[in-house]
Length: 313
Ligand code: BDR
Ligand code: CA
Image 1 (tube, rainbow, N blue to C red):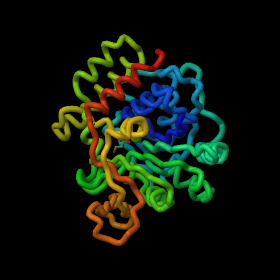
Image 2 (cartoon, protein in one colour):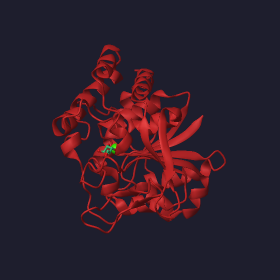
Image 3 (cartoon, protein in one colour):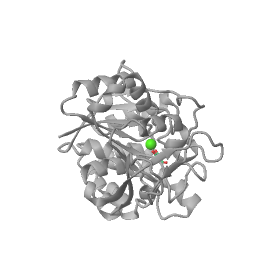
Image 4 (cartoon, rainbow, N blue to C red):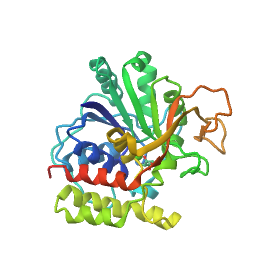
């Protein structure tokens, strides 16, 4: 069974990614959920991670608080997309569960060292601040990480927070640069693929009709989440970004991509946080990222649905 850590900033689509991973009990062992500031400030992303663990009947999975701000910049948040709480659309409460005392960065390092022989995979669903700190604090961990699979970036689709940049990379481009230069095997699921996974109506109906509380709450989250994209882009549904990371781990054969060089723009004011993808191999820069640009979206939604409905409550 693949051992993973999920680094995240919930967010409704992060919540669905967590639920998909929790529902994949036979394929994935979630060692911990580490939180970072992004969609909303750190106190809220951590609280939201606790809420989703309890909602999913996974209170035993530990949640850790990490970075409250990017490495060098002021935090930019996305309440305009996710609402004030980050999980608008629901009114979830935390009954018992609390965050662990260990910091997220230390937990990730300890975990990588503990499972050095098996090698763990890190799923990154938010700004890459925690991971950059891990790599800076203990550079030798790179040898013991199986893979970093991250949602971030965009090239053919442009950006969603500026014309050039995708939100997760834009919030902390210096951190993204450190991660991409680390030499660890990296798979990136950018907007080029996540904009193809637009939530279909019948997917929401199936969640609602399942009679399970977790699925019902997931549908409420997605109802809220999609209003932004539908209004702004006129798209047929909200793009379910972050679950792509989990579904990629479960069924990589439904995705297509290419091993390419990706660099992060950190200097320009106009294009800060842009992922510059050498798709046509026009430079001599070394490939460092498996860059995904296509998915079978019907299969994607079947997998998310089956894993969410696999949750016990
Ligand atoms: C990414 O930014 C956040 O708003 C989402 O949770 C996702 O991780 C998409 O650009
Ligand atoms: Ca996210």
